[in-house]
Every structure is written in C-alpha cells, then in structure tokens.
Length: 338
Image (tube, rainbow, N blue to C red; front, side):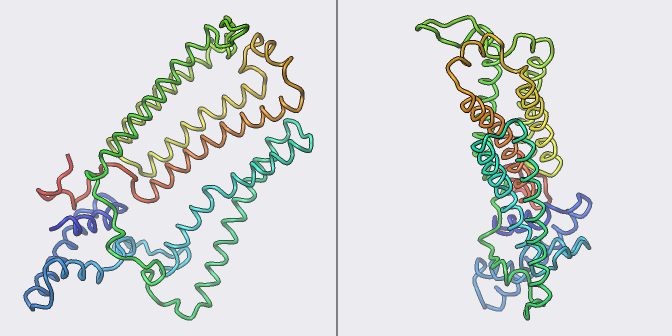
C-alpha cells in the first residue's frame, strides 16, 4: 500500500471503536488492492491512477465509516450532516464570544458595573443556542425540500482524496514545536507566580517590594495554580504522545475552567491583587478606567480559556490535529508509527 491508501485507511478507521478498526482496515485494504489490480491488469490505467480512482470510488471515508459502524449520519441526513457539523463548529467557535464581548463593551460604556459580566455571559449563551437552533432548522428544511436530497454527501462537500489527513508521523515535528512552546509558557507562568511576590512595581526608577498578587493567596490559591501548571505541563506531554480525542478535549475544558473560574472569582471578590499594589495604582486611575480595565481582564481570561477549550474540541472533532494514533492502517512495515 502507498501512503495515499494508508491515509485513507487512517481517515476511515480513526472514529470507529477499537474492536472494529482492524476488520474495516483489513477489508478496505483488500478491496482497494483488488480494485487496483483489476484496473492495472485490464490495462486501463497505471497503478497510481488506479489507486486514485479506487479511492474516489469508495468516497468520503467519514461516510464509509458511518455506514460500516451502523451509526448513520441522521441528525440532519447523510447528504448534509457533515457540512452542517463543520459550519456549526466554525460559527459557534467565535460568534457567541464576539457578540458577548461587544455587548459587554456597550454595557461598560453605558456605565454598567459588575453585572456586566453576568449579562454578557447570558447574551453569549443565548446567541449560541439560537445559532445552533436556526442553523439546524435551515439545514433540515433544505434536506426536506431540496430536489436532489437523495444524492451523496460527496456532492455537497466536493470531497477528493487530496483532502485526506496527513499520516501522524508526518505531523510529528509540528507536535514537538507545540509541546516546546506550551512547556516554555508554563515555565514562565510558574516563575512569574514566584517572582511577583518579591515586587514588580517600579517607583522612581527603583523596584519596590510590593507584590502584585495578595500574599494571603499563598495559603492555598497560589500553590493551587502552581499545581495546575504542573498538570497542564503533564497534559501537554500527554497530547504530544496520544493526540487529541474527545476524552482529551474534555480534560482540556476542565483544566481551563479550573484556572478561569477561581481567577475571575478572586478578582471580582477583590482578593486577587495585593492591597499595597492597589494603593499604588488606584490614585492614577478614575472610575471609568478601573471599570474598563476590570472588564478587559475578566474578558481576556475568559476569552483565552474559551478559545483554548474550543481549539481542543475542534481538533478532537477532526480526529486529532497533530498526534500519533494507533490505527490498523499504520501496522504495515512501511507505515508503522514509533
């Protein structure tokens, strides 16, 4: 088998239960090989062209896997399910957050207080629900009233073998760079948590001993954040070795929530920043500046954690963004993944 066939087997089996992967991979490999041999023996094409034609004939591997596993794509229907899911994930990844941020900014400008946070979250959730509902309704109506609804999903998606994902070993250098970047940033964050305690405010050209974060947080919350950083580093190493899937995406959401919720809560309750630091900076800020900076801080923490969570979900939905998976198509000698 060539790399193109290996990629097709990988795409077709990666979403199946482990018990079914081996059987489907073996059946597909034999079917593709027989088709190639038949086409070449008849003199109709070269081996490369015969392989490409065989994969085109099999069609989109996601549709093939769904039919094999007795899990038909029936939320919307086989013809439109894949494009509906792709569009829904894309829109939900930024539209609710953008609308919520715009609403929060408008409420802040109009003089809103801390209630802006709850209102913005409510608006974002409402937009997300409405977006999912109306998009699904539109696709359901298209499926029921579009004349060519009996066609194949490939007709809508325009699928070709060129869209097959790269094999995991091809993506390993990118995974390594992601791991290094994650570990470096986590190390910087850990060093900052300790270093800020010795003072990071400059007064008259000299660094003061005023800490940024409240020293009382060392009784629990700062050690908690340091432990969370260690867990994030271990998770980054795990992603490097195991790639993204739905379980890992769920862990990623939990880790982000474990950081964002306590930090935002401590900030809103006035327990995050040290009193000495606030005493130095508050005389230089009016009420509007304090309100805007507060919203920017809360919105920034929420946006970064939400984006990272969505990024993991999207990668899991795509069957792994940059990881090494153990799938049957990679068990041939030339395609084995170390």
